[in-house]
Length: 251
Ligand code: APR
Image (cartoon, rainbow, N blue to C red; front, side):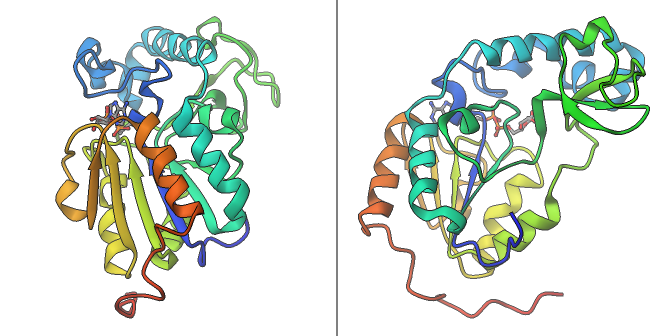
């Protein structure tokens, strides 16, 4: 991915797109944050205080993700990429690899990836070798200081400059299966909209940011996403030709 400015369609995905694959969301009934306190497992402070609990939490997530499969929503986005190529970017908050397993290649994991580890000694990122609670050595430097390569609360998401460039330049922004509770992703609709993109939300229920979208469709991702992709590919969902308004100057 060389240039992020000029991508026509930016899709943001959240936990809701993987829910029907069997990956629990965070804030729905029975979601991950109902059974765990964010501050106990998803902050740098938690890792410092109790690394074993944090490693066990993410080791369990890694195993859970390995046992599920992409659903029709992931497959539909892969189908869209096969047609649009460089005109599409998927930005995901998800740490699972279900987009990739469905065939998508242009995926930016802004909150990291559960299948990867980061070495606290040499900063190399690598495939997570096994359960990290067992303190396996870093494949690059051999030190036993691997942490999950996921972005915790209080840490900087990955790829923000690239995402910003994509949002500013796109014609169409679509958010799928995200509650809009976590920034900066919750603000992407405002950036894309301010720079002239048409905005669409596909979600099971109204989110915290529904009001900021031009259009919101409620339902299951496995139903809504394939139908929307069909619309795009048949030309029925053409974003406004050119921009409705010229983009404001960027400070
Ligand atoms: N189809 C579509 N949407 C769904 C489905 C489904 N089958 N199931 C649930 N949803 C919707 C819910 O209505 C909710 O709005 O998905 C959204 C999931 O919201 P969250 O659980 O808050 O997940 P997400 O928005 O991805 O969370 C953002 O928070 O804790 C952090 O780092 C974590 O990346 C995550 C971030």
